[in-house]
Image (cartoon, rainbow, N blue to C red; front, side, top):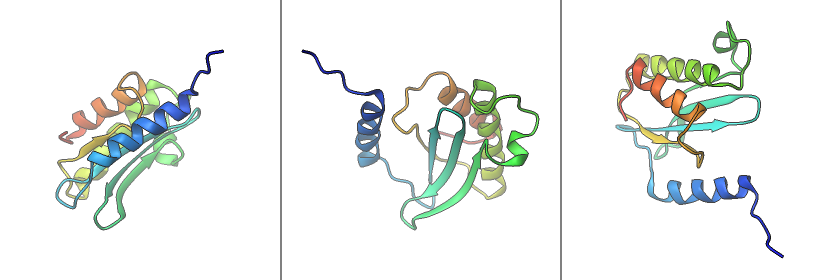
Length: 122
């Protein structure tokens, strides 16, 4: 009998492999993305200092404002726009994109494109 590996385990394994090669510094922090079934989360992290520099998610009132749903491509694009604007205000322009093991498609791509349009470079 063939046993199928759950999608969540595949994603976690991909993320571990990516994180082994990827590291955010003060000069070029890491833009980490996570999506659940209901929300999108993005944070810019300095891995050397172990600190989150900027964050945005659909749980925050200013991001959620004007959105009908918090789990679609439109919501992901808004999170990307907000994280890009907040990063520029904090003086961060270059980042390393950590897609969290998710496929670069749909919501993840919308978030990345919106962050690039807001001024982030990666």
